[in-house]
Image (cartoon, rainbow, N blue to C red; front, side, top):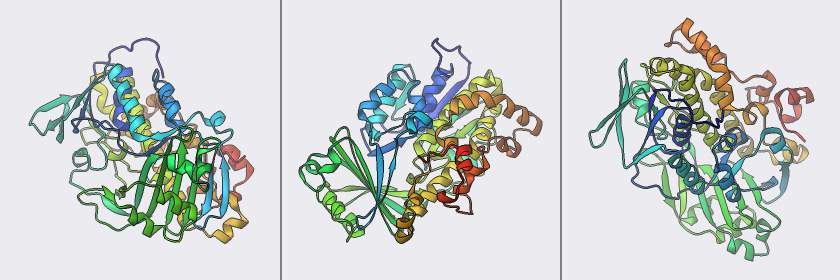
Length: 467
């Protein structure tokens, strides 16, 4: 947890590869917990790239523990009081209010990825994290005493632990899996755009986005959804469109696409959607959703290299949890290393990290699959009879979670099992951390029980917000 005093040095040296939110969280938390940390980033400079990104209460509580960070994020965050769901023709299906969620789970931050990233990156630098830009990692290695990386320059850098956080194409996956693997097309892609809301505000049919606070609206159609949001008190506008796409992603998964491509996908949709497209600058970002077969493990055989974030477990955007789970990974491995007590126990700490995280992440991933299927396969006649069926599931096991506190409380119990079973087989240790509350799985199980069939008692058990 947050400490007012400077932490005691643990003597543990950590290399973090990548400066995304997973890598920066791991680095910041390693610094806060007394480890010696070095961050390596392949890009020579960082730019304000991207569009909207969401951090649930489960990860936003970390921002609140980093002095000054939440205060900088707040004026840049979307503060819509609800999300409205419409059919592709423009019929309003359901409006889900967020009233009471902050009191139940805590604050959340949604905003521009580049702006948020700059704040977190600068915080890491301010607290003393060493970051080397232009340092491209080409390989990983380990032995019984240390782990390390080889840079494109040929330089070898060693540490006690290496955290691979450079995304879906992480070179660290090879040493963990024992072979080269390639990402696969998921069958979906996302057109993305972020621009000034000035023109949106001028049009009588779209100006509602910029009036009376931030707005968030999603249109749903067969195998397509379109989400639009206005934020910063009518200043900025963002939209994303998830659609079927079978393009090969062998070389790149983020491309540019002409606006006309999105028009084809959204042809015949609500006139409001067409007006939004009319005001959108071209080109768009064309982001291919990458699929990875679930990994049997995220850690190397020598237990000194760990994959975190997208390097280990890419999320569908409909989970609204990819960035949050990446941050949970980062803080968890930092806690485990501190609880280990010193360099001689880091292999045990790395094993404990995976055991604590694996089942929770797997359950969180299922939420994205279910939301995508509900949205893309909606029977609108049935939805009109039961609008509540479109409600986004907001559950306590996911959003009310404190990864830092949990790792602190569960480390000793996890290590006790690992010392009995050995560090090679984590099966029993993982079972300690299956999210609690069987009722919470009704909405994500093969039974596909709709929300309306959940009893009030089940909602009370899981903490689902239904008011």
